[in-house]
Image 1 (cartoon, rainbow, N blue to C red):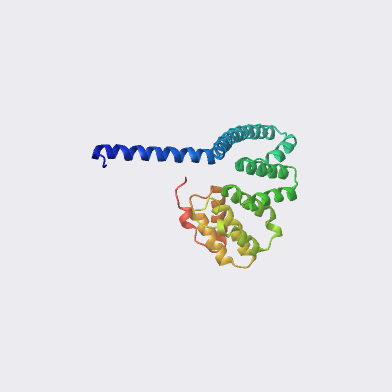
Image 2 (image 1 turned 90 degrees about the vertical axis):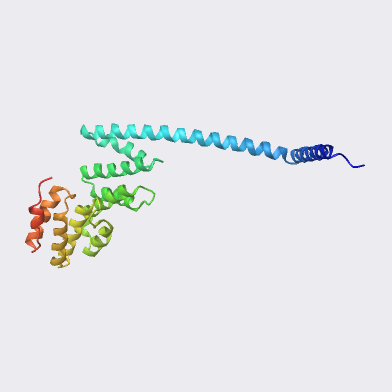
Length: 232
């Protein structure tokens, strides 16, 4: 016998609910253990990740404090005691700390007249594509300055080419060494043009601009715009 419309709807709803309940019970029996394990693993991984973040943050803060103390020691005339600490920090998981430690170690090596070690440290930073680009660019400049007399002009030009562009923070230093390499190649006209560009760039440090004005003039370049520019 057919059920009334309202009774039919209630019946179908009850059947549907019972079916879903049975499906969930069967699913729970079959996969319940795996679900519990998955949730436990997720919570464990999440907790471990949070712990590692906090640990890394604390370690980074400690490393920054150690660097600050190292700078104080160096400023107080005690660079030797900082060497083991810098070597340790150069293995830090923090990219900024590692790069700073390596660059500082190179600077200490220069103070101790160990140019070979300083060059190696700068080269290490410059070649590490995992470090922030500003640190690598600074290392390239310092490495090239130390090696300049022993490099072929074309090596200097090729190495510094990415930095020898107006607007680059290292345009003055990179441009100056590139122009000197051009002079070694006998390309005075190109060198004069580059020195003039450096002299006219008001973002370049004054000492480099002053040298560029003088050298550009001696090579026949027109640096009058830089000479007449208002002082910064």
